[in-house]
Amino acid sequence: MAMRDPHQSDRENKSEVRKVVEHKAKQKAGKMGKKLLKKLGKKGAKLAAKAAMKVGLLFVKALVAIVGYIGLPFFLIMLGIIVLVIIISLVSSFWFSSGEGLEGKDKELHEYIVEQSESSVDMSNPTEVPYKVPVELISAVIMLDVMKGEDRKEVVKTMAEDLAPTFTYEKFNEYTESQTQECIENDCEEWTDIEKQNNFVQKLTLVDFWSGQTQFDYESYKTSWEVKEETKVTRKDGAVKTKTRIRKQKFRSTENTTSDYFTFDQILNSHDLGLNDKRLIQENFLIAGGEMNYISWLEGNAGFGGGSFPGFNGVIIPGSNIPAEYMEHYLSAEKEYGVDWFVLASLHFVETGFSTHPTMVSSVGAIGHVQFLPASWAGWKYDIGGGSVPASLDITNLSVIKGGGGYGVDANGDGKADPWDVADAIHTAANYLSKSGYSKDKRKAIFNYNRADWYVEKVMNNAQKFKDAAVYKPADGVPAYGENLMRPTQASVSSSYGMRFHPIHHEMRLHSGIDLAAVGKVPIVASADGVVARSKYNGALGHHVMIDHSINGQYVQTVYGHMRGRNVRVGQTVSQGEFLGFMGSTGSSTAQHLHFEIHVGGSYNGARSFSVDPAKYINF
Image (cartoon, rainbow, N blue to C red):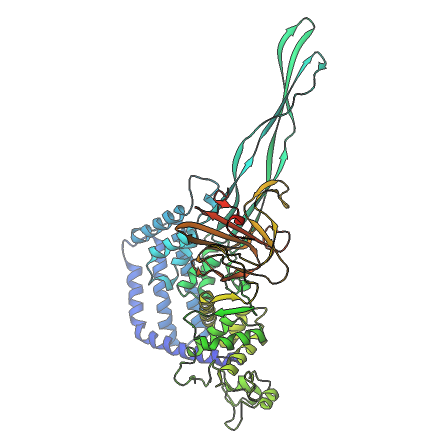
């Protein structure tokens, strides 16, 4: 519901909550006091920490009952309860992270968390151990009160599997160079030609882990010569000495870490956790000793995986979860106001179930397809209380709306702005979100629409589902087809497959794909039908997508790198020619292009052992 006066909604919500609290308080006051005394007086109680935690939970309930009778201000009641709940959650998370003082089922669950955490990496490899899914992170999630109805072991397993890191290793040659020289007294021959002994070692170049990616770059250097002398033969004219000198090629490493909590956020969304729950998870994790900037990332990223593409030039086919007849309104409003079509669709769905609400009039007087208060529609200048306006006021009159500073829009050109007309309603919602700062802070704009965090999460989660279910078909620049694969974009080849001098690392390396370059807003599409295996950002490939295909019974994987953003996510089924994102220059890149790889019989890996020349499969 589009609102202007946030205090009215707060007052109504507080009134309702207070009624519930007071009712529960009167029912349970006596019971809670008895339970509390019984708990405190129990002999042979469990460890003090665990007992304190359980007593704390009972005290929260008792506080509601007792304070409800003595009539302290409502906000003090709620503040006390919230503080205690947070403290209990923090302490619970800490104990489950450390395992201290746990026994029985609690101890069993802690051991299972540790087991699953350690299964996320190769514990025998010291390089990988720091990147395991943290025990503290899993504990921070499952100790939320809202997770008690879940199968906690299943949640633990899902988190460990879905957040397990992936490691990319590459071979580096730490070779040794040597020379010898013979000397008689001070008369020395020339040093012999350098002999080189190769020593290839594996080094970690990229790791994708639960909170982001770290790219490791290596710069080669050679050590100083080390000289050793050895006397071989003593002759009449003097001793023959042999000098040997050696030096080695070594590598200095630098690392760059980028935060990306998208997969973690999707796991939390699958359990319908709101922003306050997510904030508490972060606090749980921090108090257990972890480091996290999840909430900052969430607020800056707006929660949409891979970004969004307002004004997409092409055809967008909605999934079956959106009535197709509304797409023209969502898209035209997106074009006019810069508000993502899938957010407008989500708002329409959340407010009236895509206009299926029997009356489309709320209990507080909000009306129409997207639930505007009449005063928000026509202007708060006309408000007579609670967002209502005089019955005699024509809120569809454009002059009235202009004079009142309202948000109503005439989208269908019939000379009036009608909240009961779906085109006008959706455009007005887009207008409201745009003027609420959608381009700068999507979450804040959506919050202004209903003044509730749960509402923001609901709209955002459904928006992501609608975005993922849609198929994007570019309007022009359709790539040419090969026998089974099609060109992923219309662009010129700027670098072919094979060994080349790397433009950034300044050494000969295998270029395991083909670079296609063009200027402007160039769409990238799926080369074949398949399932998205990876959709991430890292320092090397930037925004990139990997898709698994089955072509003529053979496993094939295609890779699309350096894009501006990503329109698909892991597990999503895509069709040949489906839009993946726009060509960009993210990651390790010097100019806008698509880095395109094909792997046959295996997937992308550090050695690129399954890579093939794309030009053998597609006519570029």
